[in-house]
Structures are given as structure tokens and as C-alpha cells.
Image (cartoon, rainbow, N blue to C red; front, side):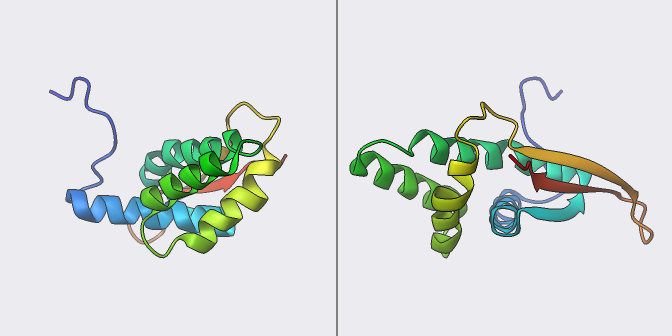
Length: 127
């Protein structure tokens, strides 16, 4: 039974799943729109919105709290994500200063031709 088990397993082991989610969230924040399968889009949506909320809530606070928030974001996104975190805190978070959530949108695109997987477009909502 799957009672109280959250998240999508996506037929991958935990290390592969974590690396894939980090990569997809980095791509979403960098490009602001990615095309992927529907289960993958649903699995990264919550984490991406939590990162945007973290950046948004630490806009007008003291320097120590901002640095701590940036470090938390880098830890969540993995090594090599400093440019993405920079964009998150300087470009994306101020855009959603007056929004209380719902920063991403998933649009269904229909099945993929090769294997019939349900495709989706996940993007940041324009403010």
C-alpha cells in the first residue's frame, strides 16, 4: 500500500531521481519553460515553487538571511547552480513579489509519437 507516501518514483532509483529533478528544476528556472512528460512535470512543480517562494520571501531582509536563503537554494539545486540561483533571486523572485503562489503552469500537449507518453509543457507564469 502507498498510504502517506508522497512523490513520484518514475521507475528510477533514488540517486537518479534526485539528479533528474535537480537538472529539470535548473532548466526550468534557466529557460522558464521546458517540455517533458506529464509525471516528470508534476514531480518537479512543487519543488520549483518552493524555491521561488524561498527567494521571494527573502527579498527585503538583511544580508545574512539572504545569504542563507541563497545557500539553501544552491544546496537544493546541487553544485554548478550559482548562475541559476543568481537569476532566481535577481530576476524571477521580484517578478512574483505580489503573488501568493502558483508560479508555474502545466499545459498538456498530448501523447508523444514514439512511445505514447503523455507530454506536457511546464512554464513560469507571466506576471
